[in-house]
Image 1 (cartoon, rainbow, N blue to C red):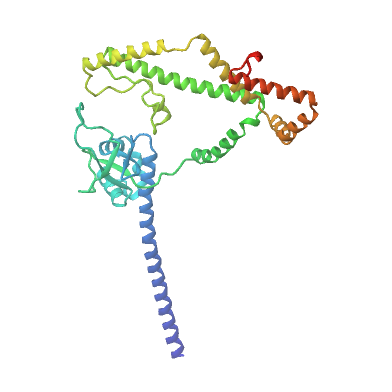
Image 2: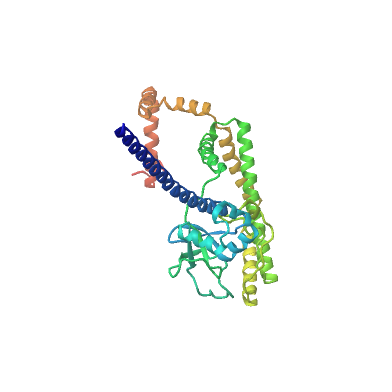
Length: 356
């Protein structure tokens, strides 16, 4: 009985020891999980901030790669205006803006950059607000809001509409290639739609150039209406913004304005002098209308009929031999006589009485 009681005590100790070790192991597993969740919170915070429209950002070239970057002072003002974004950080939501940015830099979600061109260009009063070329800041990778730039280092997640658009482009390409087999009415709709859009774009660019030239020559102001219409990266609201921002550059000299005024007058006079007349314009219009009609009226039936006609070639040598055999001897003698008279006229003997 004593042995059985001692064995049971040993079993109880072993079971309690195994239970304690399992609890320790579960606790040790829970700690790295919490750390992993904490790391993911900063990743989610960075993605949320990057997708937010309130943080102004631009694209630039850094070490032969295009990066999206923002300014330090804009990040500080953005966090002041959007404090609810700190809730994503959960336990670290009480950190200051500088500490959050330093954590993002430490996790390689951000990298501090500096402008490549640090000297003023001729005619400029200050450096560019948004430089187009950046380089990595080598001195200290810490947050600062005084003329400091920070670029995102992770790949931005594409929204659903971009994914759908990537599948739509091959379909559009196939539809463009199949344009010749469209019905005639569909061809007319596509033709006039594309021509109208192209005419609208060219007219808008022409009006922009005329307004800029007139304002620059008359008032010395650089005014580009629709300033972002040719921008590579711009939102829909920025793309159709009508009035530009304030001109920060120095006004042009009156000598340069006078020179370009003379150049514009000479260009207009040359274009007016060498403009085509009514007959030439009618000829060009008729030629272009013929080309357009050929494109619109083409159909697979015409292509197949032309292919069938080309499959019956005619032997030119046999046709010539058959025609010569069919001709009589009188026709052959007449042909030889005509050839002889042609040779005599070439030699200068036109009168038969003067022949030697």
